Image (cartoon, rainbow, N blue to C red; front, side):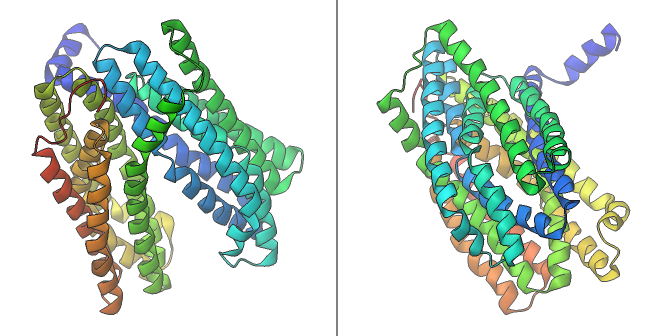
Length: 446
């Protein structure tokens, strides 16, 4: 690119936009690496046989649920660290991050022990066949040894995001993906360890990633003279801050579980179309979530610096990015559906149903874009209690909306309209908060 072209591009993209993209683009690639790791595991295990693949699906669902509930370790840490960075307290920011790492380690050990002891019970709840259950228990128990590392990876990622660094987590995530593929192939096929090899390979790759990011954070803490020893008040404060975010996360997961439950009850064709549509919806959500991560970091920093006007300005700009990204994603989802629908199924009825569902999913994407951004803004502001209450309100109103589709036999398209209603409810609660001043609390701590 020539120098005049660079100058023109800089004029087109303002300083706020460049800062958003600086954080969001690496965050997107880091987020994409997570489902790619799951796809790689599925591809490798799938060649072992149907029982192993089914076992991976059950054990993976349990594992993702355990780890997913703890996402507050990344989100809450990002907000707390970014606030202190904005206030000019670099040492305090890293000390806050170290507290988050200790909390992640403690939670990881507790969940690992619980998983090891309760794996057979958890697998049995899905009522699989005996051979599937045996494989699933093996996979889950081995994977439990990697839970502490997974949570440390989350917390360390949150620290670096708070420090306005999303590139390092991206590099580590991509590297872990490559290591995971190599280890899985070696252990599953080279050493003939079957599904146990896949679990071990993934656990080792995630452990390496967790250690790598922890080392980066610890080095930064030592350089700035921040304490490394566990600090009980700091750990308890991090845990207390995470409780509202856990509630928020649970409301989202319950809404998605209900969506799948009703889709399943509507019949085989409906659930098949739903599964593909939801997979595509989830992929688009990664791009929107990347902007939300930038929102967490930038909002926390601005409020830590006491810059209310700047917070308002960057919020409005990120809302614009969310709206535009949602519109572009929805346009692609709608405009290209005749091309990619055939990739997922050869069943004419499923194709027709899926195409109709995707039109509805596409129409709601701009709403999703703004919702994701505002969610990130309020997380960055440390406004977890409001997010928890708003999540409960949206879920309570969504439940009868979704179930009415089942009661009235409305079909899968109607269900996706109802799910769009859930996102609209979230938009209304978040917009109401954004327009107030209650969340604009400044200072190094909330």
